[in-house]
Amino acid sequence: MRIIALLLSAVTLISLFACTKSGTSAPHDTTVEESTTLPDTTVPDTTDAETTTEEITTEEITTVEITTAEPQFPIYGEDEYTYNIDVSKYLSYIDPENDEEYLIIANRKHPLGKDYKPSNLTYVAKGQSWLLRRAAKEAFEAMRLEMQYLGVYDTYNRSTYRSYSFQNTLYNNYIERDKKRYPNLSHDEIVALVDTYSARPGTSDHQTGLTIDFDPLNESFEDLKAFAYMRDNAYKFGFILRYPKGKENITGYKYEPWHWRFVGRDAATYIYEHGITLEEYMAKKNGTEIEYFD
Image 1: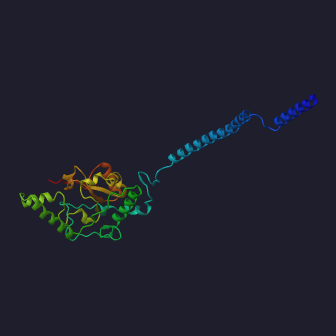
Image 2 (image 1 turned 120 degrees about the horizontal axis):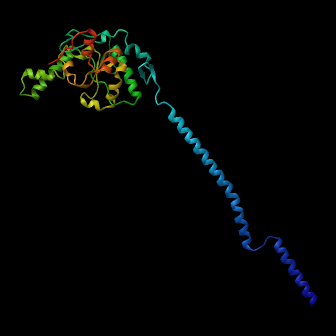
Image 3 (image 1 turned 90 degrees about the horizontal axis):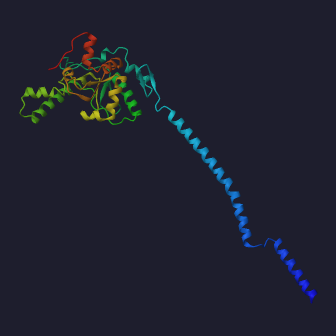
């Protein structure tokens, strides 16, 4: 019996030794092995992610700096005249070699007469009935393209060339309208009133074929982007504000921010820089006295 008992004990010890060697140890041993394995995998991944983030951030900052350094618009021109579009094909019109023919004055003191009709009248655009002299038309086209390039779209051309006959009808219509509006005024008072905002036939700036009225035909035009641009840049295209504020006794007409006149770039630049009118410019040019309206 003792021999049998010793044999059974030996078998039991051999079985336990075999279980230990085959990996069937207690559950807490497996958990410890898993927990020590996870950090080894996670740490390298976190480090790589942080490195990548820093690299991306650096690249983004560099890109922004390059973008802001680039100019917003190309610049063309020379000396004091710069443009945002290439106006080379328009320059012979904007800055004519002989600008005398574009300096004509039309007002009550200097009438053009019934038979005056300018030469080289051409349509402002296809599908329009508006006419301008060729130089004024091409200069206006250059200015229009520049304004569009800069995103200025809040106006369009309205009235341009007007014949003597057209102006005669328009002026007399204003007379009849204001007679109804102001029945207590005499005929002479009505004529004096209309003379402040409409030209008598034969004295209209529009009859020169060098004038453009822009929409709207009232003082609210000065609230538009178009007016802000033209006020500061129209001279570069040969245009002036024909009837500026505070010059009514020289031009004979009230302030009209919508009324622009082509005179050529040289004259327009001088008029703009000195804040004067076409009448004052011509008086200085010819060495004569300025004529005033009552």
